Length: 205
Image 1 (cartoon, rainbow, N blue to C red):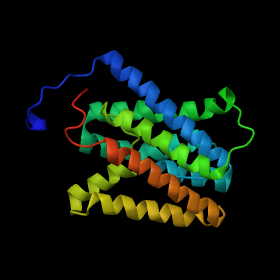
Image 2: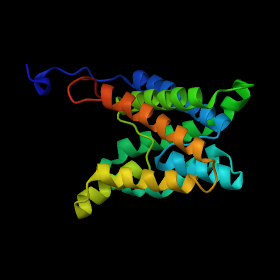
Image 3: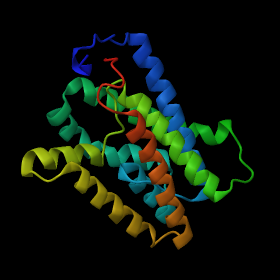
Image 4: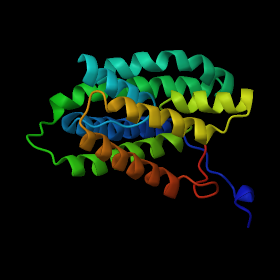
């Protein structure tokens, strides 16, 4: 049977709420690993990490503020429901990333483990959010907008911007930390690529 013809099982409101909380908690824990090991990832989270390492701004504050300009694009591209879910998710990640430092205390963390496990945790959290029609906003929405408006391939736009973020990281982080950050980004994207495929998960919100 064609996956498009399979019956769907809509998510109930309490399931969406639970997914929002679990997904953002996973992301926030991954962020705490990255902060502890002085690593970063791509998209607006990467920009928030750069801002934190360069100026001392807290990740949660930077992440929330950097995403503000992208909500207008989200409304135009994805609609109000998706945008409101994304706004809540970004707010929760911002809050949880600040609170997590008080909930757990890590005395020592191997940078390679932090890169791979932190990237995997963020990837799992994003996967949960994706499956409930929620995202962490930012550059992905910009890439989709530019694809619609100018025909630029969204994947290439995202890749190019993330590459620029990693290059910018060389100004504030040692080369080996940037290299480990790339490994973490690979782990993150593999989690999503292997598990977020059309027809594999039929639940809708």
